[in-house]
Length: 308
View 1 (cartoon, rainbow, N blue to C red):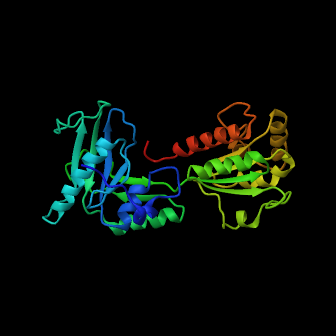
View 2 (tube, helix red, strand yellow):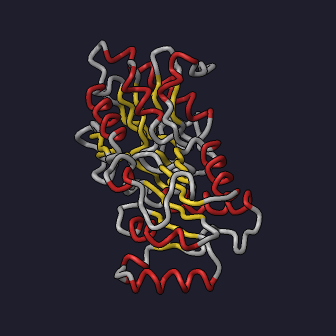
View 3 (tube, rainbow, N blue to C red):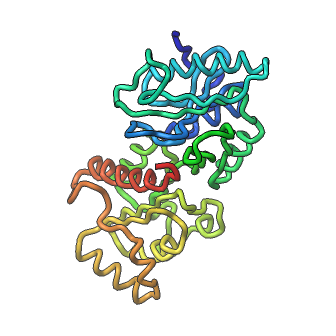
């Protein structure tokens, strides 16, 4: 089967994020589509349990279940299930790979996948998940598994809001990080010292919730003049941000911690501070630092995913 490519009319189903984790959900929430979900993995596989693919009646797909062969096979099964749904056809639970009855379709990894196909998912429930995610809250979708399904199979698909990055600082490191994040489809906000930041003050919209730091937000302080950091770090370490990092050499790090301790910041909060930042030690070039920091942030964000 030749799969159609999602075109311009459906282009807005894609979240502004590097991840395709919400693509299938958004696609199926906005138009008639079947929803395919991996509910169990026997062995190892390149996608996590809960990975999803949406399939429109014409075979157009959104989401990703690893490779074109599996996507095409599921598109065929989903279209068939949608055609049968008008004849009292319901959700289907299919096994692929190890232990599968489909002897003409194999997975090169040697593993087994159990995949639920919903020919007519509850669009109101899907839209509710989308609205919850848009409000920067975690969402949950109940999966209609057959009554005799293995109790270990995934019963609820959990979603977390897209990664968001708040950069506080000045210089080429900030612009390089924001540019790289934006290229990857990550929402990034830069508050520049002297333009959008004042010494020893936290911007009002960071305090009143207009741009609140939630559990899926990373805060990076990239200053060369570390006098700018104190008030901002005290604020950042008191938020729910999953990542708070600040650049600086060993003397700057020691002085920073001492000042924060003297200012009443508790040890538990101080332990949240990542410094030095990034995966590449002693990155000197701004573009290398940006890559190093973003990789570290993305790794920490991926570790938050409810389905591993």
